[in-house]
Image (cartoon, rainbow, N blue to C red):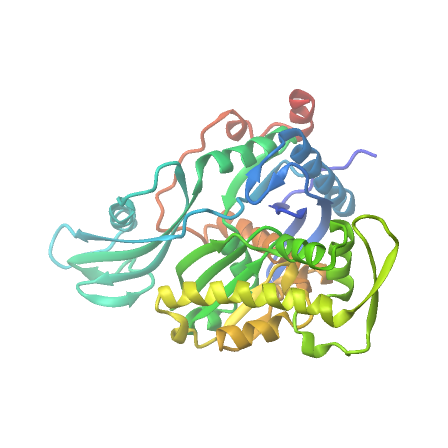
Length: 417
């Protein structure tokens, strides 16, 4: 059955190391109503790097097709998560003398001072994904969120620049294009997940978001409504699975199933007498082990992960300034006891995330594994409505696929295959 294209529909595509998740939604006054979601196992992509283009294209097409069937509509463009970056975010600052004494700040002045702040050293091989304002100053007065229309002589700005490997991002865009979709925008996972799970109060008071995916844990520190630090630790759910496989000498597939179904990140929550049947890697039948042993393996890796997060926070000298504590999200954060380990290691209150602004799908709204996908819809809504990136000078779209955004998606499917 041929699906009709609906107006006012937006789509996000979260490409992770374990799963590709496509979501289709419709903006509403009270939030985003999810019309359809599709999930497929990730093939051809690992730790932020495309390893096999055609395999990844197949994964993307499967997830998008399932989302379209559920939503009963087709989509032509998507906002895509870029994957973890090997480079932490960069803080920059700029200053501009306004022309004329006591002159009113215009939008062009805001663009100009932000351009000045962006004029900093970007590591070779990196491309800028986001330039996010932290705060403005006007004649020495700090803490200004939007200086438009104010009067002054000296305008300053502090910004946070998020970069990613140019080749890795281009390969993701290439795979999405080959699947028959147009990339409307690329979004860092920290930005997307934070939009979905953080409240305005948490952003104001200070909070850290830890998004634990399959291949990495992405960190974002917010304070005074703005993003001040971002980084990624190359450790995620797949590392937990490998630990279980090695520690219990069982195949990776069974280790993954045990992690999801019987796993717990805090061994004290498990009854000592509880036993599990485990297959041997060599195929020599089943063995009995205590569930506590499984959980000890998981707990050791969780403590290591949050220990690395703590070191990052201490290096940034911001750990004690996070009055709202930590929010953990991503698939691994749903594991029982994960919040307990995080609280003990980070020594701060911790909650497991949910996307409160998402409607129509309890799974997307409540399961932390879909926080980035939910955030992509929120980012798309705010970008299309002009609510995001007002300080960034608009850039004209470039490239054949972007210029051809009015063409039907199925024409691309025929052209690319």
